[in-house]
Image (cartoon, rainbow over all chains, first blue to last red):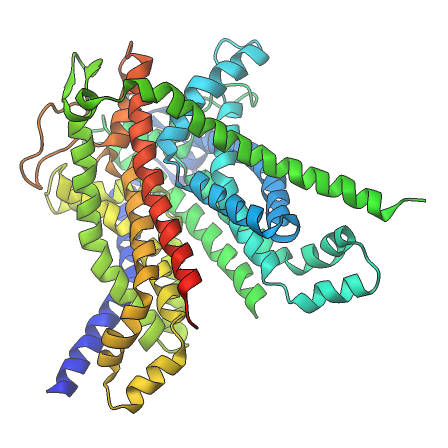
Amino acid sequence: MRKIKEFIIEKLVLLCGLASIFFVVLIFLFLLKEGLAVFKTVSLFKFLFGKNWYPISEPAQLGILSLILGSLLVTLGAAIISIPIGVACAIYIAEIAPLKTKEILKAGIELLAAIPSVVLGFIGMVTLVPLVKSIFHLPTGLTALSGSIMLAFMAMPTIVSIAEDALYSIPKTYKEGALALGATHWQTIWRVMLPAASSGILAAVMLGIGRVVGETMAVMMITGNAAVIPQSILSPVRTLTATIAAEMGEAVVGSEHYFALFAIGIVLFIISFAINVTADLFLHKRQQ
Amino acid sequence: MRNPYRTQNIAFFFLFLATLLIVIPVGLIIVIIIQKGLPAINWQFLSDIPRQGMRAGGIFPAIIGTLYLVIGAIIFALPIGLLAAIYLSEYAKDNLLTRIIKLAIVNLAGVPSVVYGLFGLALFVVFLKFGASILAGSLTLGIMILPVIITTSREALESVPQSFREVSLSLGASKWQTIRHIVLPNAIPGILTGTILGLGRAAGETAPILFTVAAFYLPQLPKSIFDQAMALPYHLYVISTQVPNVDEKIRYGTALVLLTLVLFVNLIAIIIRYKFRKKKKW
């Protein structure tokens, strides 16, 4: 009797363990099921590199190049802002801050991670957007730059916490060895600890970027949503994610537009899959 | 000659500056929302339905909607997530399957939230014909927070010392009895933290509920799990971008309620974890 119970429980637990694999596969399958239909009417090349996104005109033009470039531009901007600041903050928390400050800072970073993206988007709309508008004398403050700044804040908690972990897990002997040889604390950090933690920091950066690429609400609210090839960081752009969020509500189920939005979902899924697998490889390299 | 200590001071100053660059805006965001949102908060705002095309009245249906969604998501995700964590920490061997499961969890955590929305739309709303409903939204959110719950619960389970298990097994307890009576009770605070963090995440997300449940404007409370519902994050999105001429006060008030809810939940998680770390006997 007991043996049977143990057996059943073991199988049930295994089943739940497999649930994550099941859901990842299920997500991908359903994206494919709905998204691949678009390639009956438009070729993969035209879809990815077509310049015009007019999903509801007749005939519909379904090229997502401008959306890809929009995502790329916003992501690049956010990366340039968040990587140096995030890594610097991680070093400060891991190495320099006194214990009490460290606890408070870590809690603060966690709070930042917890703020819902729609709240950040709202705050960006009412504070950052007018600021960008008046500083650069633009007709509108809803630009790629505003989006980049706001997204940088969403990437930082990821970058800081994972990079700090990476710095923390370096064997103490590395640091002690460097200090014993007469290096200053900073020389130790710069020449010994950062190189030793490099793969973990790289993973942190990648996961931060992954978060930025997938971010939806804040981006939709403050980048202006213009589906054109972006001319500069000060022009309105539209990202892949924002397109789905903004248009799916109006797309008729089963229409070409609907399929195209799912095809954008496939693109996003593949991007995030690639980023996460690579970041995971880097993290594992560190652990070995 | 360059003085290494001066270089150090300059470097540390910049590191400190970078930290301030993160901390100050976070503080500012919270202060601004509290300062401008607080005047809007009163009993009527919290307990009334939205009126005059959401330009007046309260946000009660949105609060209730979010509550339903979060509860639904937890009911779905906690059992599966906990059992998955038990599998990884207690049963899994170090083999390819385990490696793939871990990779799947990492990927599930990394899938963009709007893609979860698409998935929920395709599977629950269209394929299973739930329609835009609390059920569809809850399940979508549940799958989204699964990785949070699995990861934190697994950490909690793994931090229970091996010797506890060995003693229990040597006394003749079966594997499941050991897990049920020895490992789980000692891991409860960690599991609770994970559950609460997942809850906070589910409460704040907008993109996954956009096409699966969220109603633009619904002046009554949902009656069953097959009804649409309003939700706080979506409501904030709607009144700040879709409806013109909404009083600033209402926008900030809604943002404040959402932020308070999410931060409060996270604060509880942080406190539980902190207390637990202090009390830990091993």
